[in-house]
Image (cartoon, rainbow, N blue to C red; front, side):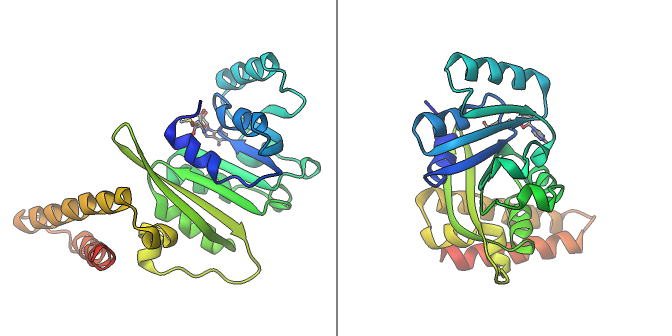
Length: 228
Ligand code: SAM
C-alpha cells in the first residue's frame, strides 16, 4: 500500500506507459504501477547502492524482474533510447535536486519522454521554471497533506508551443490555483501569515533587507489575490 503522497504521484501516471522512476529508493512506485498494470515496463533508477540492491531483491522476490529493471545510476543516465521510456517520475526530493537531475538529462534520454510527474518536497517554483523553459506544459497538479507536511505533485506534457506562466502560477501552480482545494487554501493562508510576520519583523529590526522585503510583499500580493 502506497503512502498518501506516493498514491497521489501514482494517480498521475497514464495507462499503458513505460516509466522510469528516478530516485526510486524502495521502488514502491514502480512495483505498484506494474502490479496494477498501469505501466507495462518500469525502470527503478537509484544513485545509492544500498536502496538499489534492496529494491532489486524485492523485485526478484515478487517475480517482477521481467517488467522492472532496477538500475544504479545518476538521474536519467539509467535510461537508454531503446528502453522507450515515455514517462519519468521523480518524487520525494527538493526542487533544486529535481531541477538539477532534469537539467543534466541528455536529448537522447528525454527523446521519447512525453510526460513528467514530479513531486518536489520544497522549491516547487524552480521545478515549474524548468518545465516552462523546456517546453513542458503543466496539465495537472495535486496537493496532499501527510504527517503535517504539504506535498505538491506536478504533471507535465511535452508540447511544441512555447509555455508561459505568470509569476503567481510559478509560485502556486496553474492548476492548483484553479482547483483551490482546502489543502491549497490552508497552505497559502499559513504562508501568507508567515510572510506578513516576517516583513513586520524585518521592518522592526535595524538591518533591513529591501530586496527580501520587496519579494515577500510581492508574494503577499499574489497570495491575497488568489485566496480572495
Ligand atoms: N522516490 C521515493 C519516494 O518518493 O518515496 C524515494 C525518495 S528518497 C527521499 C530520495 C531518493 O533519491 C534517495 O534514495 C536518493 O538516493 C535518491 N537520489 C538522490 N539523488 C539522485 C540522483 N541524482 N539520481 C538518482 N537517485 C537519486
